[in-house]
Image (tube, rainbow, N blue to C red; front, side, top):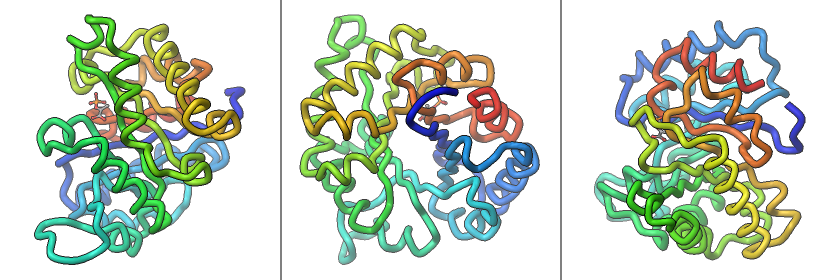
Length: 256
Ligand code: PEP
């Protein structure tokens, strides 16, 4: 893999796995990935909040890092049911997924909220993974760049160049999430290249060259190699296939 940027492969477990199931999954991943070197690839698991503590106890080797699936934009206070960045950091959380399409759709998260969350995450030394992506009707209507561009301008607003360089973008076409449909290599590369050009415009060339842009949407062992070899694809955000040791470890192995 001859890219300046190190690949980042993250598993989004969504609302799956109890604490003990999550710990067992991570232990299985360590066994399967014993041969891979930490230097080759960044691997992140994002369990539900209730499994963070148990999973953090078994993450004994920094080859696999801990991520969360969401967080509050606020640092503390009267926000029933919410969890702050500082609380996540205490469990060793290094990454947080922000603005996943399910949060945008079911919990009405806007680009403005996502940008406030991203700023709060950086303040707690947690690296955001900011998700963007178009609906099927938007792709078919030729609106992909317009939609993704608007999401990025809004969700990344207020980040400094230094913060942006430590932020990951996950391009996840909504029509490819959990559907078994994957963007073609050309569709993925074209949109990733568009995102990188936009980062030059919004930040600068140096930042744009550093930012990792993950692809997400039905990534599996069988398609990982082709997707990860694309020039502007710097990793994957994996949903369904991250719930099973063999699938997730094969995605990692096939990407190296
Ligand atoms: C996701 O939800 O981020 C995702 C990409 O899911 P899946 O891999 O199941 O399509």
